[in-house]
Amino acid sequence: MEIKRFYDKYRNYILLNKNIIISGIFAFFAGALFTQLYAQYDKNNLTNSVVTLSIEYAIYIPLFALLFYIDNRQRYIDPLTGKKYKNRIKSDIKKLIAAFSISELIFSFAKIAIHYELLQMYRVEPYQASMIGSLAAWAIFLVSINLSVKAVKLFQSQKK
Image (spheres, rainbow, N blue to C red):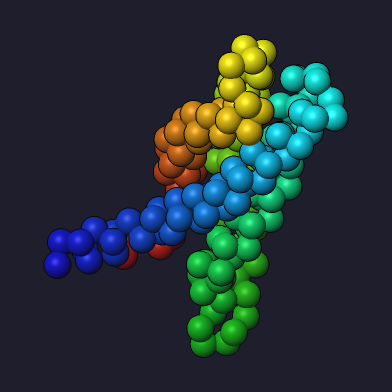
């Protein structure tokens, strides 16, 4: 009974984090594969780090947006008329952008810095540098995004 109450209370945050983690896993492995392949063609470690981050975002952002929409689409449609709540959609998009902007800057800086430094040390393979950098940056990001989402009150309208 306690678990159900906990889930009901934090459902939106649980689903948000689930979507972040699922999309992050896909980006994580794509980044590891890409950085390993890229390292064979270009030895510039900074370029490798930045381009790998771009590849990860190209996978992460659209996948997260799709998963977030699937989990939250009922919030944006009037159950009686079927009309979209356009103001709620706009408001939530603004809140998501605000929450993600700071968190993504933190993630990007941490990911590039760690990835680059590990590549510079030549002690790990490029895919390992990408994975270690991603894991460290994700730990920081998850704390940051949850605090940001709470600060912008993304799920305030859903409280019972």
